[in-house]
Length: 114
Length: 113
View (cartoon, rainbow over the protein chains, first blue to last red):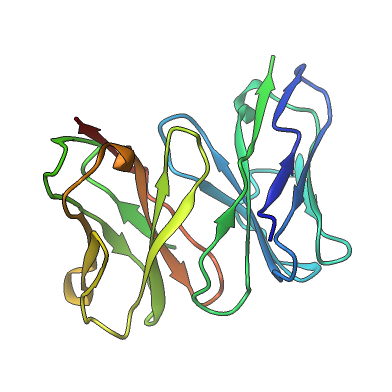
């Protein structure tokens, strides 16, 4: 079946603007993750959903970042008042949700804040 | 909190050589899973192998093998007879029962023809 889909693939925005990044997980996957990856570094955990609820949002850097998954499928990561330091590749992953299930990643959204 | 150390930032080998990628991790969990992922130049992270913490039997899958030692918190990954297509960044990632994976900063492997 189809893999994890992320849109847009690239987003350029001005400092101070609001952005939304979308993730469409693999059908049937109950767990959904958002990570952020800067150049030369590994993915940094942001938030994890099990179904509709955020099971762990400890990685969100501040209250400008928010994510939702209202129907337990598609998720949107929302960033308010963007800053240049928010520039990175935002990765979404989904998994079957059982313990030990590997993560299946999308191609990411490259966010550039000018 | 979990922490992952991949001490080898970059490795370069010639095709057909064997190469081992090192990973040392820290976790407070008594049971957990360990993963290796590959990120080729195209950018998409791909799952490679998985090991659970309560079984230290080492395994081989094709050209991949892994050595897990819980006593030293190490989970090393070996590619046998490397190929140019193996060139990528490789990430080690412990995964807790609570559902979260923590990634290291990766090892960039270059396989030269």
